[in-house]
Amino acid sequence: MMPWFTVSGLLLISYGAVVGLFYAPPDYQQGDAFRIIYVHVPAAYLSMMAYSIMAVSAGIGLIWRMKLAHAVAAGAAPIGAWFTFLALATGSIWGRPMWGTWWEWGDPRLTSELIMLFLYFGYMSLRASIDETSKADKASAVLILVGAVNVPIIHFSVEWWSSLHQGPTLIRKGGPAIDTAMLYPLLAMILGFTLFFAALLLARVRTEVLHRERRSRWVRNLVLGESA
Amino acid sequence: MAADNPTLGQGLAAVVKRDLLLAFKRPGDILNPLFFFAMVSTLFPLAIGPGGDQLQILGPSVIWVAALLSSLLSLHSLYLSDLEDGSLDQLILSPQPLPLICLGKTVAHWLVSGLPLVLVSPLIAITYQMPVETIGVMVVTLTLGTMSLSLLGSIGAALTVGLNRGSALLSMIVLPLAMPVLIFGARTVALAAADDVVSAGVYFLAAYCMLALSFSPFAAAAALKISNE
Amino acid sequence: MELLAMGKYGAYVWSSFSLTAIVMIACVVQARARQNRIYRDIAIRLKSTDSAQ
Image (tube, rainbow over all chains, first blue to last red; front, top):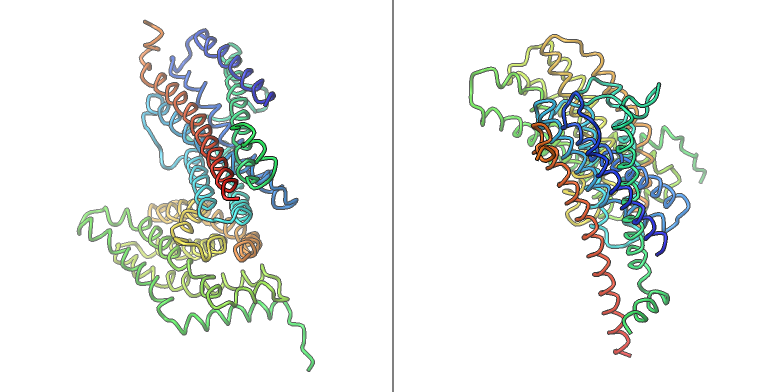
């Protein structure tokens, strides 16, 4: 699909620009270790964005009974789970030199992000164990909505509780607290990751719809037409 | 024959009474989780060995984890017996609102599993050499916590009723939601042991419980309708 | 090369970035594998019902 290709194309450009850029910014208090921010923040941001997309899609699917909405939620789940894992892993790697520890059990942000990973697992397991598609859709939708309260908790956890994790850097009163030379690569990475996510999601939804509609005529024509 | 329309309160009471009666007919349902709780609580002292501070430090956490696990154990059958004998269909179709019925069953579940646990916990706490004032805090937090667990667990039970390996799946679903309860519950008791301020933790647990109370009957009802299709 | 060393944090920075790259590639691979599998399943099913007629 054309939009899909343009999206991936754009993302590659963003990537190239940024990975090139990240060599440029000067040293920081944290030394070069801070550069992990360029993967950690996009991953974390997307992990939450993916969950939000799933929650909204699940809600739409439940209320207006759109099968496509459920397909979107189903497609987004594995990607979101991977990004959550990535956020936790890169965060842990970053934490080792900065905080002196790989993990901190008391930390609200780490814990709530971990809980979100488990919610993703629960969602995917529930889906997998119900054979009937519409039932699986609705049941997992309920689950995703119940767990949705976790997302604002993750975001605000650094404000509400004392945490090892630093406070908000980008979205705060008075504008971003980060130097411009470092900010732009970060924004580009966030955007690039988002485009990557969007492209991947589109691909997955496509597959998902194909699978759900496998009995219909257009699928038949598509598949047989291509292999004829 | 004139039938009065039962009020919401009467409907709720009827559901609670029914479930309690059913539970008392099968004492195993009440006693098994309780024995499980007691046994799990003794696993740690057995593993750690006598003497030393370790037991005292670990006490609150171990009791809390044991309470969580035994609640999970008893949640599985919350709707299962109704599914098996067909009364689940009746409940869904009844004129009483389904969320109310779910709430009633959850209340009964707590009375049968959470409450005994809370009552037995001081005994176990004593074996962990917990000081008496701390035990008071522990009882309060456990009460709020087990209520939250019953409420959240009813959603998981409704989502997984009748599925193969439903109990493992139920745990997977409920545990992420229950983690904040565990964290605040165990930590608050630990704070109490250190003579620190506990009100923040207790308020949080109460708030979480209220939150669960306000939405879980509806979520469980929705899940039941979906599962029963 | 100074670039590889990254101050003294080379191991951390590079492992993060490579982990990210690996995971993202894994995502794509996973999605693609799923698509191929579903395509194949549909094709097989359609062909067998066709030949059964």
